[in-house]
Length: 109
Image (cartoon, rainbow, N blue to C red; front, side):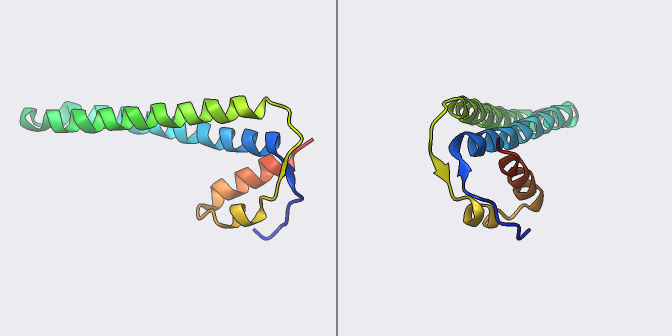
């Protein structure tokens, strides 16, 4: 997407990032459920290994949630700063992520 955005205020950018991270946190939850279902059919001699991986997915979900909350809380601080976001958006390789961030930032008040 080549639409250039005007410099965006920090609050708006952080809200867009927090929203995107919330989507990632939900995906981690789905992955955790899927791995839990796999655990039910894994032979007993391999269950400990799968449990360790389940723990890693849980830690990932907690990490993403913590960063989401942190970013969301930072966005509540009404500062005067603005960010040039076009180059950073262009570097995102997942088109849907870049598009949602662009839309969230473009919708700034």
